[in-house]
Amino acid sequence: MRAVNRLQDKVALVTGAARGMGRSHCVRLAEEGADIIAVDLETAAEELDETARLVDDLGRRCVTSFADVRVGTSLDNAVEHGVSQLGGLDIIVANAGIYADLAPSWELSDVAWQRTIDINVTGTWLTVKAAAPYLGSGGSIVIISSTNGIKGGASTAHYSSSKHAVVGLARTLANELGPLGIRVNTVHPGSVATPMILNTAVFAKLRPDLPNPTQQDAAVALAERNLLPVPWVDPVDVSNAVLFLASDESRYVTGTQVVVDAGLTQKV
Ligand code: NDP
View 1 (tube, rainbow, N blue to C red):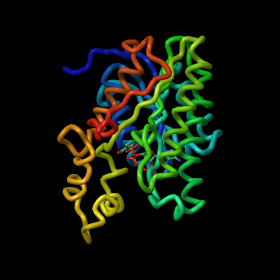
View 2: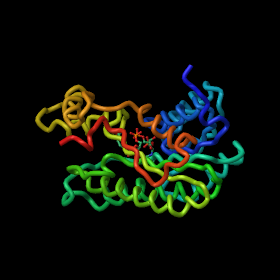
View 3: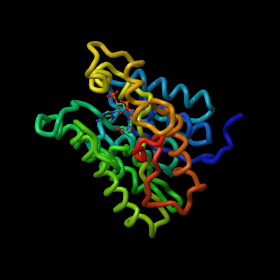
View 4: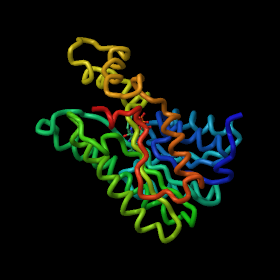
């Protein structure tokens, strides 16, 4: 039995909850006793239902809502609905994000730049804006950044800028909310086995030397970036860091960055 109920009867909001790491965060927090407000785009309705089923199977409640994190009113409605159903809010996991349209800075389209900034930066701010007023002392905000929020990378000007920006947001929020007993931290995953990177477009970027690179081909390139002999970490490895920051085990940890990257950022 894995659960030790570190989040017994807490309520956690998770954006981008339909799949990938968002789903993993919902399940991991529910395993520890939390009820979940799971938010994602309406286009991900079926996958969001599956997330809710997984939480339900753990004996916890999951209230799902559709919201585009770029639209403040849709987040306001989702949070209000979830809080009214579950009775409060203790944890915010601002997870929704995109990694798309990779290109050298000078070739990046204005549309690609703006879309990434809108979802990854403005969407994170709007998530906190909608939900933070419901938190009380002991509350925790976890913002999902990236190793691209610590170092740059080729063809990721928009993404790296967005993931650095949310660190500034988190540090500011930590100052603003610290006096209220609310903590704010960022998590910085390296490569994680989710649909975000396990797709043919990313494989092609990773292996330009091959005509039709497979996941196995991409794994070779990704493993070379890490200190540990793995191509990627699993979503649950990141969820375990989220769990730590969400729980009282980290009660005096705020304004900091937790890196889960198999050593990617330290490799020389
Ligand atoms: P996925 O693409 O697997 O999942 C992202 C989720 O966010 C999807 O369900 C997606 O919905 C949703 N989403 C996208 N845009 C919006 C929006 N405008 N409003 C609401 N929901 C939205 O990604 P991951 O799980 O891999 O990534 C989660 C977070 O982790 C992101 O912030 C990402 O940048 C970060 N990250 C990921 C890494 C990785 O290697 N996977 C590495 C470092 C950081 P839909 O499917 O309908 O588009």
